[in-house]
Image (cartoon, rainbow, N blue to C red; front, side, top):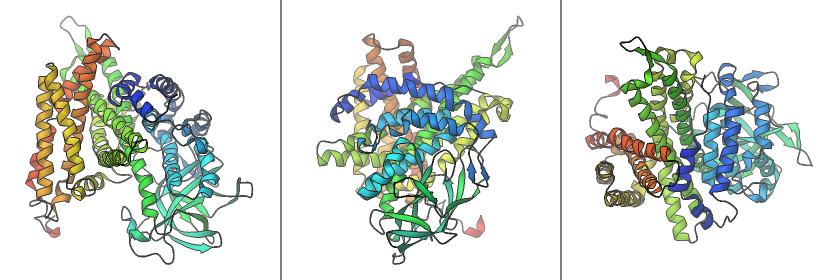
Amino acid sequence: MSEYQHPYRDAEFVLNELVEFDQLCQNAQLDEVNSELASVILNEAGKLGSGVLAPLNTVGDTQGAKLGENGVEQTPGFAEAYQEFAEGGWQSLTPAEEFGGQNLPNVLGTAVTEVWQSANLAFALCPLLTQGAIEAIAHHASDELKQTYLPNMVSGAWTGSMNLTEPDAGSDLAAIKTRAVPNGDHYLITGQKIFITWGDHQMTDNIVHLVLARLPDAPAGVKGISLFIVPKFILDENGNPGERNDAYCVSLEHKLGIHGSPTCVMSFGDNGGAVGYLVGEAHNGLACMFTMMNDARQNVGLQGLAIAERSYQQAVQYAKDRIQGTQRDGSRYNIFKFPDVRRMLMQMKSGIEAMRALSFVASAEIDRSKNAQDPESAKRHHARVELYTPIVKGWITELAQEITYLGTQIHGGMGFIEETGSAQHYRDARILTIYEGTTGIQALDLVGRKTLSNQGTVLAELLADIQETVGELEQSGNFDAIAQSLQDALEAGKEARQWLLDNASDPAAAGSVSVHFMMLMGYLCGGWLMGRSALKAKALLDSNQGDADFLQAKLVTAQFFCEHLLPRAHSSLITIKAGSSSIMALDEEQF
């Protein structure tokens, strides 16, 4: 089994050089927050991740959550780890000070969250879902509900869950059947939800479920959805957990991976109705839901990065330890010497660095949108957040499948043996392209809401930023090959954008090409940020700053990405230009 060490040098490089963290904090008027503080926080997070959470990763896989007489029994050791997590104030990093939060930048929270996700993905889903619930309540609930629930959620004393999906609804939220009936100062909720991550456990005194349901007078479709807080325990007059609410986990899903994370079937109202409280306006649950979903989607993209990093670390160590070559003199050598193993490791390493860069840069746009000095700037940064989100979620989680596959491949036959641990990363990663909106849903979102709806103007602004980086690479005189590769991929991106606009009248075009369009944009963004990384690394080397070995390696990984991964943009363009004709040609009976 592999140990986990936080890749602090790359995380700090992205924060300081690509995000420009100190400038971001200065613009947000966070006078006491800077890169030195961020380094201290990341160092402490790394200790908790490697020392406490990572050793429980295999335990969670082999001794997953179980459903007992009193509800879900979490993996042994998780409760103690969670208490340490909560007592350390880790849940409170980014929430507002008003509710006990530390109000640190979102991008720093993202950098810290990577640690938890790499160390123990199943465990980390619990605070991740709580964070999404905090965001939804903070943005949409009444002041009374905020004051009632947020302090304990922000402190980690209580956790949160998202209850959206139903057996007959899936991703089609317009089809949900869960009902909410007014009853005095609250509502009575009845219905069933499936695939509810961390829907029950015994680690905290209460769980705050956010539940989508319909009121009796709700119009049909998504415009008739409302959002409710449904606590596991109804609060007494002092605001403490009291009577057990009519909300129970009735079964656990048997899953391919993340066994330590209980995925619940939740039943509400089997004994008369679960007490719930309306969040925001009636029939406006969709807006509340997207606050949760957008927060979760970028974080699931981050999970793709995190599990890829964990798989990579194990593969590197295995390649160094595995002796499988014999010299003429009889001496043996490890598989690290094999060029094909080097190819796979470089593909993993460069891909991960591009994923981390995009994750952090996209997260920082949330901070810039929040702290913008004028409405026009806020609008521009918000539009960039919206554009990045499906790329972060879709491209990174898809690439994570490939990277964890390579991690197992490097192990050879031992990768197929569960005891080595590589297979767990491969299995755990598989859900990432599915939950919080499948790859197809992310791609349609990118094509429809984020590109066609504004005639591609927001995407054009991103492409202009990439063009600027190409110019900087060319002017430097040091990166001609990277500049040419990025320019070629950029031309593919421009052509794909125009093709999409020109063919918008074809009702099947968007759905047929959307995934390839999203993947093209993902590789293009990755190449762009690796190009920027090369420029920053060279500047630091020229001024004798930073870790020279790390910076030299950054130049190589940037070159590798642009030589081996960025050319995939061209094949995506070819497929996009093929359109929908062959995809839609066969009748159902011909399949």
